[in-house]
Image 1 (cartoon, rainbow, N blue to C red):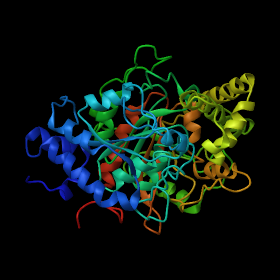
Image 2 (image 1 turned 90 degrees about the vertical axis):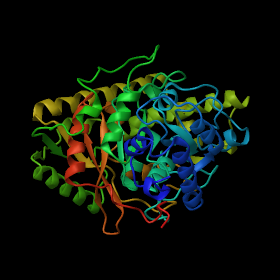
Image 3 (image 1 turned 120 degrees about the horizontal axis):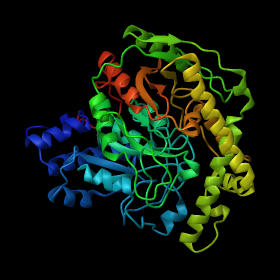
Image 4 (image 1 turned 90 degrees about the horizontal axis):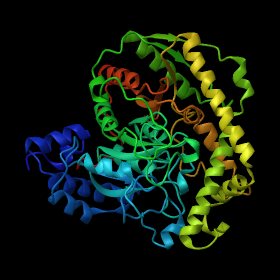
Length: 487
């Protein structure tokens, strides 16, 4: 073929699909190149834990849907969207031991397939997606391609590392407290958490943990984000609720003038944690970049009413309840009740806490978050701003082992996670769309993401300004140390 695998590894999904549509490269060649790249770098990174190479080769040689990403290699996270018969272990050793395979096609996996994407494997995740890293006991740690002594973020860490390392241009991810935006930040990628219910979790899930979790992808470019969001958005029959249709396709927002936006810079998270100076400085620098392209930056004082909401404790009540529910489901699959030996220490601690959360306490936590949502929405109106700007994370990429739960109190790992993900979980609680953009780096040369948050259902605003920033401050040529370019 005229385009080598090493050249393809630099391209986004749209560009790879254009090679196929033009006839310059066939789907078989794209898939074979992705497999070669995976075999070259995955032993060092441990991003792909379930290779599906033969299935991918068979799919590439057959009839493919005429979707926007026809023939492009892809990875599914081993949690959330899946096709029937694929391995599904969710970072859990019990599911690994019993050889669990997903029972049905999820709606999102079918939409990925109908887009023409070819799944070459499934990626690593922390147990049940709990932590902002990917270091499960069941499969070992995924390593960050920028610095292999550091974690890849999580919970979509395997997907983040694989895209950053050039194995595939785009990969499935999901986000219940930052799990799309966190790996986007630490791997130098674009990560959009859509509005609540924008992407269906059908058929097995209505709304995970009352809507905390959203499904989507990690990508290299904004145009891939826009095109993919068009393709996978929209309700499925029986969904508990949906979202309004956008004014126009998201792909058409790429390159559209966002106008002069009023953007609120916030560098103090509602968790009360103190972010590292490096990420605050990065957010300040990003604010200056946005001013330079014509936007107005404001620095509002957070109303004192926010002090009355304990975001962390109410979030953990919802999150722990979700883990208790998952324990019941996996117990049903295994045919017995789970024991502490079946899961990691933190997972068991959350299960126990979740079992103690009463129905009244759970509903109270949801109610608190709904109140918080109205307060945030009121800030947009009252202060007259269009977007919120924050650091994506509370610190730079963390060393492997930072979120260790093997000590006497496993919940210490959650405390560390709270500090690291101090800016992301709020917007799972409020349901707003939020995007992490790779606009900054640390003095060590590590990626630092910048988060932009729009009002509910306004992904169009995020796509417009993100595309503007991508053009003004391009990131496409940045490469981590571990990159599958054949050099």
